[in-house]
Length: 342
Ligand SMILES: Cc1cc2nc3c(=O)[nH]c(=O)nc-3n(C[C@H](O)[C@H](O)[C@H](O)COP(=O)(O)OP(=O)(O)OC[C@H]3O[C@@H](n4cnc5c(N)ncnc54)[C@H](O)[C@@H]3O)c2cc1C
Image (cartoon, rainbow, N blue to C red):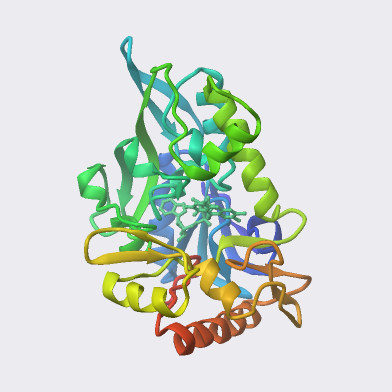
């Protein structure tokens, strides 16, 4: 028996705090519920969409069809040796709590991904990343329900087709519902701060022998000083992906704008800091109606109270237009439309 709730307000289920009504809402607490839930959609001739922590979504005011809220819990150790271990983590576990649990056990690999909001099941969708680490660096397998073939299947790291904020799951737009993932963590004890901001943080604190806990605390402090807490200032994290342009184009821009920030991706391509482009065009701190650009980080768009998806998309459009005119660079929005109608 499926316990489907009607007309559920999702304001507490999305970090932008958009007022959004789901026509039908079902909490999925075990993978056995998926097939009957999708059969129900077929019988009723309605669509479905998958919701986890709602931290990377732009919710419409009305959400038709069935919203599946993934709440499958559980963490288990699959394999362990002296140097490493494999964890199986269910989709409904909280990502940051998983990082904290790993750090508390001295397991290395995901500490740089501390404080990323959301649930484990969404982490492969955009191959979450921060401070030089991406999920793909530790991921062994993803298990998902294939809604087209109506069966569960597993993906190894290569089959996930991970790229910068991208994967086969994101491109398949809801075809696969992730139920759990396997990750490999290391028990190595020598810790290095690979990212410059972290190196600066440890130098400022005169920390020479770095522990995993130091990295975790450093990341949490750095992130909290730059990014708004969605509970206080509703937001969806980075609103735009960092654009990747040809190195030739980047060098031309560098001549005109010596301070432009970019990172080499390959000999031919460079990833440009979208936050720098937006700040350079004067958007930092901008406000219009109920939306704005976060004053401490131009990459984050915020809901200042009662904003709608149309208002935030309008602001994003204006920002993109000005970046295109100034730098001849197209920006791509990072959060996903919900429901995904594109
Ligand atoms: C303050 C803030 C900071 C952030 N910082 C970062 C960062 O540093 N790096 C980064 O990469 N991201 C960052 N994000 C974005 C976001 O937290 C991540 O993308 C996160 O993985 C989204 O998880 P979620 O559970 O909230 O997913 P949701 O927002 O609920 O869903 C995101 C997408 O994944 C799909 N999805 C969700 N669960 C499943 C599932 N089980 N199976 C299949 N599809 C699914 C949804 O349909 C949707 O398309 C940040 C967001 C905020 C608000």
